Length: 309
Image 1: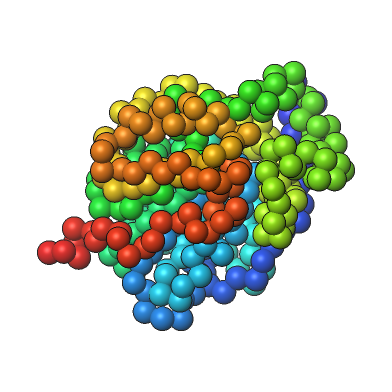
Image 2: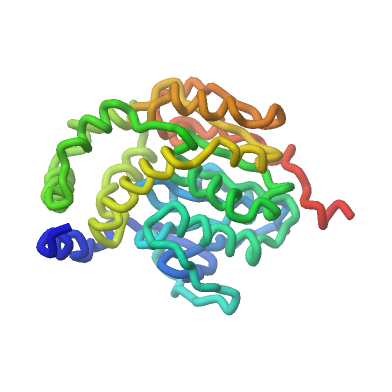
C-alpha cells in the first residue's frame, strides 16, 4: 500500500453515535466489552457480537428483560457507543496475538469475555453478520468453552459463504487509495438513496442505527481490513467448525442484499442436526431489527455443565 494511501486510511474518524448506558465497560486489547446493569437477579446471559460497520446497540432492544444479563462486544478499532461509563482495564485481560480488525482478533475478545464475565450458567452468544463469523472463529479457537452455550447466528458470515453480487460489484473497482474518498461520498449522500436497496424497508430503529455506518470505526484502515479479512476468512474456513456447535439457531433472511443467501444456506446445512436453520420472512439482512419476533426464546437455552452437577 502506498504511504500516502496508508496515511489517509489511518486518519482518525470521530464517533457520531452513542446511547445512554448504565453498566461497566472493559477495555480488552483494541476492543471493549460492555456489561449492562440488570435490575433483577439474572437468569440468562446474552453476549452480543455486532456486524461490520455496526455497533453493540444492535442488540439492546432485543434483550430488554430485567433478568437478562446483557454483555456487548465492541470489535477492535470500533468506537464504543456509550455515553457515561469510563473504560476500565480488567486484571484478567491477556494480550492478543492476531492482527487487529480481523475476525481472529475479535474472536479472542469474545473468548476472554466468555471466560470471565457471565454470572449465570445459561449463556447465549448472538452474532449478526460478521459477528457470526467472530463467534464461529472463537468456537474454532476454544471449542471447550461452547459445549453448553446457545449460539444464534443471524444473517451470518459463514465458512464458504459469499458477498452478494451487488456488494461485489461495488467493491471490485475500489483500490485502497479510493476508500477515504468513497466513504466521504457515502457519508454526504442521503441514506434514502441507497438504503432501500441494501437495508430493505426502514423503521425508526433501523434508521437510527444504520444512518452513520461509516463512522462506526476509528479509521478507514479498519473498514478495508474488515472487508478483506471477511472475504479471506469465508474462503479459507472449513465447515468442520460446525461440529463444535452443540446448541443453536441460524436465522436466514428472506431477502439479503449484503451476503449471498444461497451460499449462506448451503453452508448452514453442514451443521449438526440439533442446530436449527430458520428461514425467516425478514425482508433484509437486519433480521432482528426488522422484527424482534425472530429472536429465539431464552427459556430453552441449555445449562452449562457446571450448573447441572
